[in-house]
Image 1: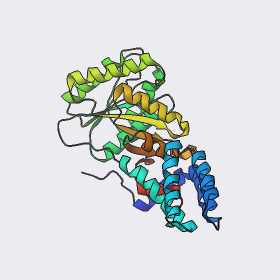
Image 2: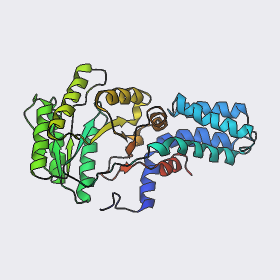
Image 3: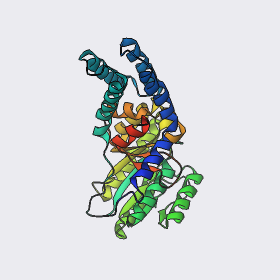
Image 4: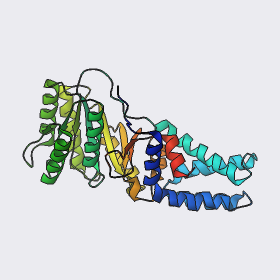
Length: 314
């Protein structure tokens, strides 16, 4: 099967590094320089380091784990100089991120593989669908899209534009139609046509609106009538700029529909990219991809080592 990334690893790392520039400014300036500017590794340094990590939205739990590990290493005299502290910090970050570093995999088997996309308004869900479609097409897979956001005509139009751009069919109904009906029709059509991947859009519902969450449950339930395993993937798209609010979103979507993977978008537009550590530490849900730019190739499979390397400018 064709590989997801069609360009060289160096250029991919360069895009990730550039995309993380705002978060890296916080961590590199406030963390790396903070550590390297000290001649003594003491509690004052670790307290300042904790404040810097919290400033990048690393989160209380993840920060406590990182700083606790550093304090223990300092106590055992395993981190007695700045470079040793930085090395220990990188190792601690990787220990948090590696368990959730699970790329999206589409197994061989009966088609279609159905992906249900969920997330709040403005997270970049429809754009992510377009980028995923381009990726799958580049892999030689056939794709169909379902316009399940029936409350906004603009959402349907945007999805149809992505469909035209990627030369894939889009199943849509009139504005105000039942989203579950749209998804059901799309799945039936995808099965009949032996399409490899069906990606279903949903409304950019607010996670606090219980009625809309019930609608998501209905979409999932109706899809299951045609295929007991559908949807095979429930991807939650989160705007990295939401910071700790992303944790609340993820918990509620997960409770409603059983999120199986996370796409963290807009890392290039925020200094709060450290939220990925909070997501990993508190939720443990697989982080499938990260978005580090507006280009079609800027939706990247999440790679823990590459991420930490780009984040700490190492």
